[in-house]
Image (cartoon, rainbow, N blue to C red; front, side):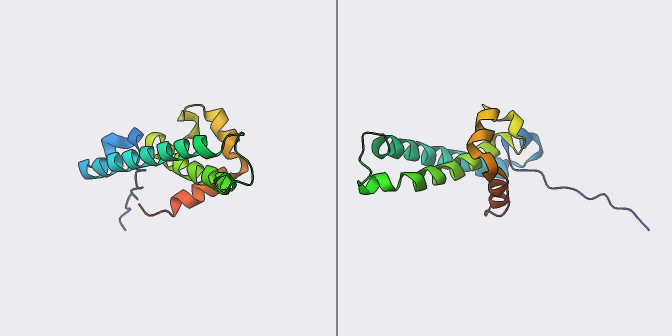
Length: 116
């Protein structure tokens, strides 16, 4: 009986770039650009409509919590793409862990089932 070594898949992130094909790296570059653009849009939107001087009855202001949650999802995807799943390698790791808090395992599960 032959023993086969099981090959584990490599996480698609820039820390593993030497193990990935050029096609995958091109896809990752595209994903990184898209995520960066989306995050910039959320930052602009949050600055414009979610600062304290806006009134709570303003329609756009009421969307702020949803926008913040959506931004965190995209930010998580961007960080995973750049730094893999080792949160200690992420910039400002303690702050990020506090920001995501108890939701960090939820983000991991969501990330695992997102289309690649």
